[in-house]
Length: 237
Length: 237
DNA sequence: GGTCACCAGATTGCATACAAAGTTGGCGGC
DNA sequence: GCCGCCAACTTTGTATGCAATCTGGTGACC
Image 1 (tube, protein in one colour):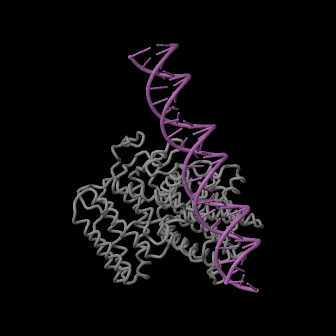
Image 2 (cartoon, chains in turn red, orange, green, cyan):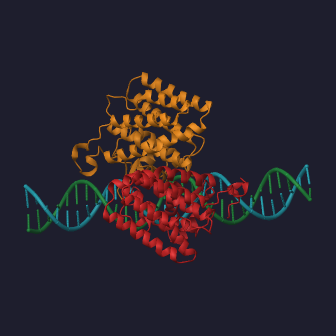
Image 3 (cartoon, protein in one colour):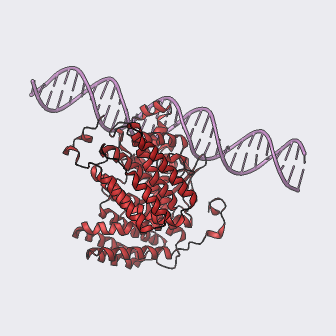
Protein backbone atom coordinates (compact mmCIF):
# COMPACT_ATOMS: atom_id res chain seq x y z
CA UNK A 1 0.00 0.00 0.00
CA UNK A 2 1.44 3.32 -0.99
CA UNK A 3 0.52 6.82 -0.01
CA UNK A 4 -1.22 7.35 -3.30
CA UNK A 5 -3.71 4.63 -2.40
CA UNK A 6 -5.31 6.68 0.29
CA UNK A 7 -8.73 7.96 -0.64
CA UNK A 8 -7.69 11.61 -0.68
CA UNK A 9 -4.96 13.34 -2.55
CA UNK A 10 -2.18 14.37 -0.20
CA UNK A 11 -2.56 17.94 -1.31
CA UNK A 12 -4.95 20.48 -2.70
CA UNK A 13 -5.49 19.04 -6.12
CA UNK A 14 -2.40 19.53 -8.17
CA UNK A 15 -2.04 18.28 -11.69
CA UNK A 16 -2.40 14.54 -11.73
CA UNK A 17 0.40 13.92 -14.19
CA UNK A 18 2.92 15.76 -12.10
CA UNK A 19 1.54 14.01 -9.02
CA UNK A 20 2.12 10.62 -10.62
CA UNK A 21 5.71 11.47 -11.40
CA UNK A 22 6.16 12.86 -7.92
CA UNK A 23 4.95 9.58 -6.47
CA UNK A 24 7.23 7.53 -8.66
CA UNK A 25 10.25 9.64 -7.82
CA UNK A 26 9.33 9.64 -4.17
CA UNK A 27 9.14 5.87 -4.08
CA UNK A 28 12.42 5.61 -5.93
CA UNK A 29 14.12 7.97 -3.53
CA UNK A 30 12.74 6.28 -0.44
CA UNK A 31 13.69 2.89 -1.82
CA UNK A 32 17.12 4.26 -2.55
CA UNK A 33 16.91 3.24 -6.14
CA UNK A 34 17.90 6.87 -6.58
CA UNK A 35 20.94 7.54 -4.45
CA UNK A 36 21.23 10.80 -2.54
CA UNK A 37 23.00 13.42 -4.59
CA UNK A 38 21.80 11.99 -7.88
CA UNK A 39 21.05 14.70 -10.35
CA UNK A 40 17.50 14.83 -11.57
CA UNK A 41 17.77 16.71 -14.82
CA UNK A 42 14.49 18.03 -16.10
CA UNK A 43 15.07 16.82 -19.62
CA UNK A 44 16.29 13.45 -18.47
CA UNK A 45 13.38 12.78 -16.16
CA UNK A 46 11.02 14.11 -18.79
CA UNK A 47 12.36 11.69 -21.36
CA UNK A 48 12.06 8.86 -18.88
CA UNK A 49 8.40 9.51 -18.19
CA UNK A 50 7.68 10.81 -21.66
CA UNK A 51 6.43 14.18 -20.54
CA UNK A 52 7.67 17.69 -21.08
CA UNK A 53 9.96 19.52 -18.73
CA UNK A 54 6.99 21.58 -17.56
CA UNK A 55 5.44 18.62 -15.82
CA UNK A 56 8.75 17.46 -14.44
CA UNK A 57 9.40 20.89 -12.98
CA UNK A 58 6.11 20.74 -11.18
CA UNK A 59 6.90 17.34 -9.72
CA UNK A 60 10.38 18.42 -8.68
CA UNK A 61 9.00 21.49 -6.99
CA UNK A 62 6.67 19.34 -4.93
CA UNK A 63 9.50 17.05 -3.91
CA UNK A 64 11.58 20.06 -3.06
CA UNK A 65 8.84 21.20 -0.70
CA UNK A 66 8.86 17.82 0.96
CA UNK A 67 12.58 17.96 1.47
CA UNK A 68 13.29 14.90 -0.65
CA UNK A 69 14.88 16.94 -3.40
CA UNK A 70 17.19 19.90 -3.23
CA UNK A 71 17.02 22.46 -6.02
CA UNK A 72 19.73 24.98 -6.77
CA UNK A 73 18.98 27.83 -9.04
CA UNK A 74 20.38 27.44 -12.54
CA UNK A 75 22.06 24.24 -11.46
CA UNK A 76 19.33 21.69 -11.19
CA UNK A 77 17.68 19.35 -8.76
CA UNK A 78 19.31 16.58 -6.79
CA UNK A 79 18.10 13.83 -4.54
CA UNK A 80 18.38 15.23 -1.04
CA UNK A 81 21.36 14.31 1.03
CA UNK A 82 20.11 14.99 4.55
CA UNK A 83 22.79 15.84 7.04
CA UNK A 84 22.93 14.09 10.40
CA UNK A 85 21.64 17.30 11.92
CA UNK A 86 18.65 17.28 9.60
CA UNK A 87 18.08 13.66 10.48
CA UNK A 88 18.04 14.48 14.17
CA UNK A 89 15.56 17.28 13.57
CA UNK A 90 13.29 14.94 11.69
CA UNK A 91 13.31 12.42 14.50
CA UNK A 92 12.88 15.14 17.12
CA UNK A 93 9.82 16.28 15.25
CA UNK A 94 8.42 12.79 15.13
CA UNK A 95 9.01 12.28 18.84
CA UNK A 96 6.95 15.38 19.37
CA UNK A 97 4.10 14.69 17.00
CA UNK A 98 3.51 10.97 17.09
CA UNK A 99 2.61 10.59 20.76
CA UNK A 100 -0.04 13.24 20.25
CA UNK A 101 -1.30 11.37 17.22
CA UNK A 102 -1.59 8.23 19.29
CA UNK A 103 -3.62 10.02 21.92
CA UNK A 104 -5.96 11.39 19.28
CA UNK A 105 -6.19 8.06 17.52
CA UNK A 106 -7.21 6.30 20.70
CA UNK A 107 -10.27 8.53 20.87
CA UNK A 108 -11.36 7.45 17.42
CA UNK A 109 -10.08 3.96 16.82
CA UNK A 110 -12.64 1.40 15.73
CA UNK A 111 -12.52 -2.33 15.04
CA UNK A 112 -12.13 -1.79 11.31
CA UNK A 113 -9.14 0.41 12.00
CA UNK A 114 -7.56 -2.27 14.14
CA UNK A 115 -8.13 -4.72 11.32
CA UNK A 116 -6.34 -2.41 8.90
CA UNK A 117 -3.42 -2.11 11.30
CA UNK A 118 -3.25 -5.88 11.59
CA UNK A 119 -3.11 -6.12 7.84
CA UNK A 120 -0.14 -3.80 7.79
CA UNK A 121 1.58 -5.81 10.48
CA UNK A 122 0.96 -9.02 8.59
CA UNK A 123 2.51 -7.46 5.52
CA UNK A 124 5.52 -6.45 7.56
CA UNK A 125 5.78 -9.96 8.95
CA UNK A 126 5.72 -11.41 5.51
CA UNK A 127 8.49 -9.11 4.35
CA UNK A 128 10.61 -9.68 7.43
CA UNK A 129 10.63 -13.38 6.66
CA UNK A 130 12.27 -12.90 3.31
CA UNK A 131 15.72 -11.71 2.37
CA UNK A 132 17.16 -9.39 -0.24
CA UNK A 133 17.61 -5.72 -0.83
CA UNK A 134 14.30 -5.20 -2.56
CA UNK A 135 12.60 -6.81 0.40
CA UNK A 136 14.44 -4.49 2.69
CA UNK A 137 13.12 -1.55 0.71
CA UNK A 138 9.60 -2.83 1.00
CA UNK A 139 10.16 -3.32 4.69
CA UNK A 140 11.12 0.29 5.20
CA UNK A 141 8.08 1.38 3.29
CA UNK A 142 5.74 -0.94 5.14
CA UNK A 143 7.12 0.33 8.40
CA UNK A 144 6.37 3.87 7.32
CA UNK A 145 2.85 2.91 6.39
CA UNK A 146 2.18 1.91 9.97
CA UNK A 147 3.00 5.40 11.16
CA UNK A 148 1.03 6.97 8.34
CA UNK A 149 -1.99 4.93 9.26
CA UNK A 150 -1.66 6.19 12.80
CA UNK A 151 -1.55 9.75 11.51
CA UNK A 152 -4.57 9.17 9.34
CA UNK A 153 -6.50 7.78 12.24
CA UNK A 154 -5.77 10.77 14.43
CA UNK A 155 -8.07 12.83 12.24
CA UNK A 156 -5.94 15.95 12.00
CA UNK A 157 -5.26 16.62 8.33
CA UNK A 158 -2.58 19.17 9.11
CA UNK A 159 -0.54 16.84 11.26
CA UNK A 160 -1.19 14.02 8.88
CA UNK A 161 0.45 15.94 6.08
CA UNK A 162 3.38 16.81 8.29
CA UNK A 163 3.76 13.14 9.07
CA UNK A 164 3.72 12.21 5.41
CA UNK A 165 6.70 14.45 4.96
CA UNK A 166 8.44 13.23 8.09
CA UNK A 167 7.97 9.58 7.24
CA UNK A 168 9.29 10.11 3.75
CA UNK A 169 12.32 11.94 5.01
CA UNK A 170 12.84 9.33 7.72
CA UNK A 171 12.88 6.64 5.11
CA UNK A 172 15.51 8.53 3.18
CA UNK A 173 17.57 8.97 6.32
CA UNK A 174 17.30 5.30 7.20
CA UNK A 175 18.36 4.35 3.71
CA UNK A 176 21.30 6.70 4.05
CA UNK A 177 22.54 6.09 7.54
CA UNK A 178 20.97 2.78 8.43
CA UNK A 179 23.27 0.07 9.63
CA UNK A 180 22.53 -2.99 7.58
CA UNK A 181 23.11 -5.28 10.52
CA UNK A 182 20.19 -4.36 12.69
CA UNK A 183 16.56 -4.32 11.73
CA UNK A 184 15.92 -0.73 10.78
CA UNK A 185 12.53 -0.40 12.34
CA UNK A 186 11.97 -2.81 15.13
CA UNK A 187 8.90 -4.57 13.97
CA UNK A 188 7.88 -5.94 17.31
CA UNK A 189 7.44 -2.36 18.48
CA UNK A 190 4.58 -1.85 16.09
CA UNK A 191 2.72 -4.78 17.55
CA UNK A 192 2.98 -3.51 21.09
CA UNK A 193 2.01 -0.01 20.01
CA UNK A 194 -1.09 -1.37 18.36
CA UNK A 195 -1.89 -3.29 21.51
CA UNK A 196 -1.63 -0.09 23.53
CA UNK A 197 -3.95 1.62 21.09
CA UNK A 198 -6.45 -1.18 21.45
CA UNK A 199 -6.28 -0.94 25.22
CA UNK A 200 -6.78 2.79 24.82
CA UNK A 201 -3.76 3.40 27.00
CA UNK A 202 -2.52 6.71 25.66
CA UNK A 203 0.37 7.07 28.05
CA UNK A 204 1.66 3.62 27.21
CA UNK A 205 1.25 4.16 23.49
CA UNK A 206 3.08 7.46 23.71
CA UNK A 207 5.89 5.93 25.68
CA UNK A 208 6.22 3.03 23.30
CA UNK A 209 6.21 5.34 20.31
CA UNK A 210 8.96 7.52 21.70
CA UNK A 211 11.08 4.51 22.51
CA UNK A 212 10.34 3.10 19.10
CA UNK A 213 11.59 6.26 17.43
CA UNK A 214 14.59 6.32 19.76
CA UNK A 215 15.27 2.79 18.68
CA UNK A 216 15.14 3.64 15.01
CA UNK A 217 17.45 6.59 15.50
CA UNK A 218 19.85 4.60 17.64
CA UNK A 219 20.23 2.12 14.82
CA UNK A 220 21.58 4.86 12.60
CA UNK A 221 25.17 5.86 12.16
CA UNK A 222 24.86 9.60 12.45
CA UNK A 223 28.50 10.48 12.67
CA UNK A 224 29.46 13.71 10.90
CA UNK A 225 30.04 11.91 7.63
CA UNK A 226 33.80 12.16 7.61
CA UNK A 227 33.79 15.45 9.39
CA UNK A 228 34.12 17.43 6.21
CA UNK A 229 31.82 20.20 5.20
CA UNK A 230 32.77 20.63 1.60
CA UNK A 231 29.97 20.82 -0.90
CA UNK A 232 27.41 18.22 0.11
CA UNK A 233 30.19 16.29 1.85
CA UNK A 234 31.45 14.72 -1.35
CA UNK A 235 27.95 13.97 -2.49
CA UNK A 236 28.15 10.60 -4.17
CA UNK A 237 27.29 12.02 -7.54
CA UNK B 1 9.72 42.24 9.13
CA UNK B 2 8.45 39.63 6.76
CA UNK B 3 9.36 36.02 6.34
CA UNK B 4 11.41 36.82 3.28
CA UNK B 5 13.75 38.89 5.40
CA UNK B 6 15.13 35.90 7.17
CA UNK B 7 18.62 34.97 6.10
CA UNK B 8 17.62 31.69 4.53
CA UNK B 9 15.02 30.89 1.93
CA UNK B 10 12.04 29.15 3.49
CA UNK B 11 12.47 26.28 1.08
CA UNK B 12 14.90 24.42 -1.07
CA UNK B 13 15.74 27.14 -3.51
CA UNK B 14 12.85 27.62 -5.83
CA UNK B 15 12.81 30.23 -8.53
CA UNK B 16 13.15 33.64 -7.02
CA UNK B 17 10.59 35.31 -9.23
CA UNK B 18 7.94 32.83 -8.29
CA UNK B 19 8.99 33.17 -4.68
CA UNK B 20 8.50 36.92 -4.83
CA UNK B 21 4.99 36.52 -6.18
CA UNK B 22 4.27 33.87 -3.62
CA UNK B 23 5.30 36.27 -0.88
CA UNK B 24 3.17 39.07 -2.26
CA UNK B 25 0.14 36.85 -2.59
CA UNK B 26 0.75 35.38 0.81
CA UNK B 27 0.87 38.78 2.40
CA UNK B 28 -2.24 39.81 0.54
CA UNK B 29 -4.12 36.71 1.64
CA UNK B 30 -3.03 37.01 5.25
CA UNK B 31 -3.91 40.68 5.27
CA UNK B 32 -7.24 39.78 3.78
CA UNK B 33 -6.75 42.15 0.92
CA UNK B 34 -7.63 39.01 -1.02
CA UNK B 35 -10.83 37.60 0.41
CA UNK B 36 -11.23 33.84 0.82
CA UNK B 37 -12.76 32.31 -2.25
CA UNK B 38 -11.32 34.91 -4.58
CA UNK B 39 -10.34 33.40 -7.86
CA UNK B 40 -6.67 33.71 -8.70
CA UNK B 41 -6.64 33.32 -12.47
CA UNK B 42 -3.23 32.55 -13.86
CA UNK B 43 -3.50 35.08 -16.65
CA UNK B 44 -4.89 37.73 -14.35
CA UNK B 45 -2.20 37.38 -11.72
CA UNK B 46 0.40 37.18 -14.44
CA UNK B 47 -0.75 40.44 -15.93
CA UNK B 48 -0.73 42.04 -12.51
CA UNK B 49 2.88 41.11 -11.82
CA UNK B 50 3.93 41.30 -15.45
CA UNK B 51 5.16 37.74 -15.65
CA UNK B 52 4.04 34.77 -17.66
CA UNK B 53 1.62 32.17 -16.45
CA UNK B 54 4.50 29.76 -15.94
CA UNK B 55 5.80 31.75 -13.00
CA UNK B 56 2.34 32.31 -11.60
CA UNK B 57 1.66 28.60 -11.71
CA UNK B 58 4.78 27.95 -9.71
CA UNK B 59 3.77 30.49 -7.09
CA UNK B 60 0.24 29.14 -6.88
CA UNK B 61 1.53 25.62 -6.46
CA UNK B 62 3.62 26.73 -3.51
CA UNK B 63 0.68 28.46 -1.91
CA UNK B 64 -1.41 25.40 -2.51
CA UNK B 65 1.14 23.36 -0.59
CA UNK B 66 0.93 25.80 2.26
CA UNK B 67 -2.82 25.54 2.39
CA UNK B 68 -3.40 29.19 1.60
CA UNK B 69 -4.73 28.46 -1.86
CA UNK B 70 -6.97 25.73 -3.09
CA UNK B 71 -6.51 24.49 -6.63
CA UNK B 72 -9.10 22.53 -8.58
CA UNK B 73 -8.09 20.81 -11.72
CA UNK B 74 -9.18 22.58 -14.89
CA UNK B 75 -11.04 25.11 -12.77
CA UNK B 76 -8.40 27.28 -11.27
CA UNK B 77 -7.00 28.44 -7.96
CA UNK B 78 -8.85 30.23 -5.19
CA UNK B 79 -7.89 31.82 -1.95
CA UNK B 80 -8.44 29.14 0.67
CA UNK B 81 -11.60 29.21 2.69
CA UNK B 82 -10.64 27.17 5.73
CA UNK B 83 -13.50 25.43 7.45
CA UNK B 84 -13.96 25.72 11.20
CA UNK B 85 -12.74 22.16 11.43
CA UNK B 86 -9.56 23.04 9.57
CA UNK B 87 -9.13 26.01 11.87
CA UNK B 88 -9.37 23.78 14.91
CA UNK B 89 -6.80 21.41 13.47
CA UNK B 90 -4.42 24.26 12.86
CA UNK B 91 -4.70 25.45 16.43
CA UNK B 92 -4.46 21.93 17.78
CA UNK B 93 -1.23 21.56 15.86
CA UNK B 94 0.10 24.79 17.25
CA UNK B 95 -0.79 23.79 20.80
CA UNK B 96 1.27 20.69 20.23
CA UNK B 97 4.28 22.23 18.56
CA UNK B 98 4.81 25.60 20.17
CA UNK B 99 5.42 24.48 23.75
CA UNK B 100 8.14 22.20 22.44
CA UNK B 101 9.62 25.10 20.52
CA UNK B 102 9.69 27.16 23.67
CA UNK B 103 11.53 24.43 25.54
CA UNK B 104 14.09 24.18 22.77
CA UNK B 105 14.41 27.94 22.50
CA UNK B 106 15.15 28.26 26.19
CA UNK B 107 18.21 26.11 25.68
CA UNK B 108 19.56 28.45 23.06
CA UNK B 109 18.28 31.91 23.80
CA UNK B 110 20.89 34.66 24.01
CA UNK B 111 20.74 38.35 24.83
CA UNK B 112 20.68 39.34 21.17
CA UNK B 113 17.67 37.08 20.70
CA UNK B 114 15.90 38.73 23.59
CA UNK B 115 16.62 42.08 22.03
CA UNK B 116 15.08 40.96 18.76
CA UNK B 117 12.00 39.79 20.61
CA UNK B 118 11.73 43.12 22.36
CA UNK B 119 11.88 44.86 19.00
CA UNK B 120 8.98 42.78 17.80
CA UNK B 121 7.01 43.59 20.93
CA UNK B 122 7.72 47.28 20.52
CA UNK B 123 6.45 47.10 16.98
CA UNK B 124 3.31 45.40 18.20
CA UNK B 125 2.87 48.06 20.84
CA UNK B 126 3.18 50.78 18.29
CA UNK B 127 0.56 49.16 16.07
CA UNK B 128 -1.82 48.51 18.94
CA UNK B 129 -1.83 52.19 19.72
CA UNK B 130 -3.20 53.13 16.34
CA UNK B 131 -6.54 52.47 14.71
CA UNK B 132 -7.72 51.42 11.29
CA UNK B 133 -8.08 48.26 9.29
CA UNK B 134 -4.61 48.40 7.77
CA UNK B 135 -3.19 48.69 11.25
CA UNK B 136 -5.17 45.68 12.27
CA UNK B 137 -3.63 43.76 9.41
CA UNK B 138 -0.17 44.75 10.45
CA UNK B 139 -1.03 43.74 13.97
CA UNK B 140 -1.97 40.24 12.93
CA UNK B 141 1.23 39.95 11.00
CA UNK B 142 3.39 41.30 13.79
CA UNK B 143 1.76 38.87 16.17
CA UNK B 144 2.65 36.05 13.81
CA UNK B 145 6.22 37.23 13.64
CA UNK B 146 6.58 36.72 17.36
CA UNK B 147 5.71 33.06 17.00
CA UNK B 148 7.94 32.70 13.95
CA UNK B 149 10.84 34.16 15.85
CA UNK B 150 10.24 31.60 18.56
CA UNK B 151 10.29 28.85 15.96
CA UNK B 152 13.47 30.19 14.45
CA UNK B 153 15.14 30.28 17.80
CA UNK B 154 14.26 26.68 18.55
CA UNK B 155 16.76 25.62 15.93
CA UNK B 156 14.73 22.89 14.31
CA UNK B 157 14.37 23.74 10.63
CA UNK B 158 11.67 21.14 10.13
CA UNK B 159 9.41 22.45 12.86
CA UNK B 160 10.23 25.99 11.82
CA UNK B 161 8.86 25.35 8.37
CA UNK B 162 5.76 23.73 9.82
CA UNK B 163 5.26 26.80 11.96
CA UNK B 164 5.57 29.09 8.98
CA UNK B 165 2.68 27.26 7.45
CA UNK B 166 0.67 27.17 10.65
CA UNK B 167 1.14 30.86 11.36
CA UNK B 168 0.11 31.78 7.84
CA UNK B 169 -2.98 29.63 8.03
CA UNK B 170 -3.76 30.97 11.47
CA UNK B 171 -3.63 34.49 10.16
CA UNK B 172 -6.06 33.55 7.43
CA UNK B 173 -8.36 31.94 9.96
CA UNK B 174 -8.21 34.94 12.23
CA UNK B 175 -8.98 37.23 9.34
CA UNK B 176 -11.92 34.99 8.46
CA UNK B 177 -13.45 34.19 11.80
CA UNK B 178 -12.00 36.83 14.07
CA UNK B 179 -14.44 38.91 16.05
CA UNK B 180 -13.56 42.49 15.42
CA UNK B 181 -14.41 43.45 18.97
CA UNK B 182 -11.66 41.69 20.83
CA UNK B 183 -7.98 41.96 20.22
CA UNK B 184 -7.22 39.00 18.03
CA UNK B 185 -3.93 38.08 19.57
CA UNK B 186 -3.64 39.17 23.15
CA UNK B 187 -0.52 41.20 23.04
CA UNK B 188 0.18 41.12 26.74
CA UNK B 189 0.58 37.37 26.42
CA UNK B 190 3.64 37.79 24.26
CA UNK B 191 5.33 39.86 26.88
CA UNK B 192 4.81 37.31 29.61
CA UNK B 193 5.90 34.51 27.32
CA UNK B 194 9.11 36.33 26.60
CA UNK B 195 9.61 36.84 30.32
CA UNK B 196 9.25 33.12 30.87
CA UNK B 197 11.78 32.46 28.14
CA UNK B 198 14.22 34.84 29.77
CA UNK B 199 13.76 33.13 33.12
CA UNK B 200 14.32 29.85 31.29
CA UNK B 201 11.15 28.48 32.81
CA UNK B 202 10.08 26.00 30.17
CA UNK B 203 7.00 24.77 31.99
CA UNK B 204 5.73 28.30 32.49
CA UNK B 205 6.45 29.28 28.90
CA UNK B 206 4.66 26.19 27.64
CA UNK B 207 1.66 26.87 29.84
CA UNK B 208 1.51 30.49 28.77
CA UNK B 209 1.78 29.54 25.13
CA UNK B 210 -1.04 27.03 25.30
CA UNK B 211 -3.25 29.51 27.07
CA UNK B 212 -2.27 32.14 24.56
CA UNK B 213 -3.33 29.92 21.68
CA UNK B 214 -6.50 29.00 23.55
CA UNK B 215 -7.16 32.68 23.91
CA UNK B 216 -6.72 33.35 20.23
CA UNK B 217 -9.00 30.49 19.33
CA UNK B 218 -11.61 31.51 21.87
CA UNK B 219 -11.80 34.90 20.23
CA UNK B 220 -12.93 33.29 17.01
CA UNK B 221 -16.45 32.63 15.90
CA UNK B 222 -16.14 29.09 14.64
CA UNK B 223 -19.76 28.33 14.09
CA UNK B 224 -20.56 26.19 11.04
CA UNK B 225 -20.70 29.21 8.74
CA UNK B 226 -24.44 29.50 8.23
CA UNK B 227 -24.85 25.79 7.82
CA UNK B 228 -24.90 25.92 4.05
CA UNK B 229 -22.72 23.73 1.97
CA UNK B 230 -23.25 25.12 -1.49
CA UNK B 231 -20.13 25.67 -3.51
CA UNK B 232 -17.65 27.55 -1.33
CA UNK B 233 -20.55 28.77 0.80
CA UNK B 234 -21.40 31.58 -1.58
CA UNK B 235 -17.77 32.44 -1.97
CA UNK B 236 -17.65 36.17 -2.39
CA UNK B 237 -16.33 35.94 -5.90
C1' DG C 1 54.76 26.10 -14.97
C1' DG C 2 50.90 28.36 -13.08
C1' DT C 3 47.08 31.50 -13.44
C1' DC C 4 43.57 33.98 -15.56
C1' DA C 5 40.41 34.97 -19.23
C1' DC C 6 37.61 33.42 -22.68
C1' DC C 7 34.74 30.22 -25.22
C1' DA C 8 31.78 26.20 -26.12
C1' DG C 9 28.47 23.09 -24.29
C1' DA C 10 24.81 22.03 -21.42
C1' DT C 11 20.98 23.07 -18.34
C1' DT C 12 17.76 25.83 -16.26
C1' DG C 13 14.34 30.02 -16.26
C1' DC C 14 10.87 32.10 -18.62
C1' DA C 15 7.65 33.16 -22.33
C1' DT C 16 4.66 31.82 -25.76
C1' DA C 17 1.78 28.61 -28.59
C1' DC C 18 -1.26 24.98 -28.91
C1' DA C 19 -4.54 21.49 -27.05
C1' DA C 20 -8.00 19.92 -23.77
C1' DA C 21 -11.41 20.56 -20.35
C1' DG C 22 -14.91 23.26 -18.28
C1' DT C 23 -18.36 26.91 -18.22
C1' DT C 24 -21.84 29.89 -20.12
C1' DG C 25 -25.30 31.35 -23.05
C1' DG C 26 -28.57 30.48 -26.46
C1' DC C 27 -31.51 27.64 -29.28
C1' DG C 28 -34.74 24.08 -30.28
C1' DG C 29 -37.83 20.52 -28.77
C1' DC C 30 -41.18 18.82 -25.65
C1' DG D 1 -42.82 27.79 -20.28
C1' DC D 2 -39.38 24.52 -18.94
C1' DC D 3 -35.79 21.25 -19.84
C1' DG D 4 -32.03 19.45 -22.36
C1' DC D 5 -28.59 19.88 -25.86
C1' DC D 6 -25.09 22.26 -28.55
C1' DA D 7 -21.72 25.66 -29.63
C1' DA D 8 -18.58 29.40 -28.58
C1' DC D 9 -15.78 31.29 -25.09
C1' DT D 10 -12.83 31.16 -21.26
C1' DT D 11 -9.37 28.99 -18.51
C1' DT D 12 -6.23 25.59 -17.44
C1' DG D 13 -2.73 21.77 -18.90
C1' DT D 14 1.17 20.74 -21.66
C1' DA D 15 4.78 21.25 -25.07
C1' DT D 16 8.26 23.74 -27.23
C1' DG D 17 11.47 27.68 -28.26
C1' DC D 18 14.60 31.18 -26.85
C1' DA D 19 17.52 33.68 -23.60
C1' DA D 20 20.33 33.71 -19.37
C1' DT D 21 23.36 31.33 -16.33
C1' DC D 22 26.58 28.03 -14.93
C1' DT D 23 30.27 24.37 -15.93
C1' DG D 24 34.35 22.75 -17.76
C1' DG D 25 38.06 23.09 -20.76
C1' DT D 26 41.48 25.34 -23.65
C1' DG D 27 44.76 28.73 -24.75
C1' DA D 28 47.28 32.87 -24.01
C1' DC D 29 49.87 35.55 -20.89
C1' DC D 30 52.66 36.37 -16.85
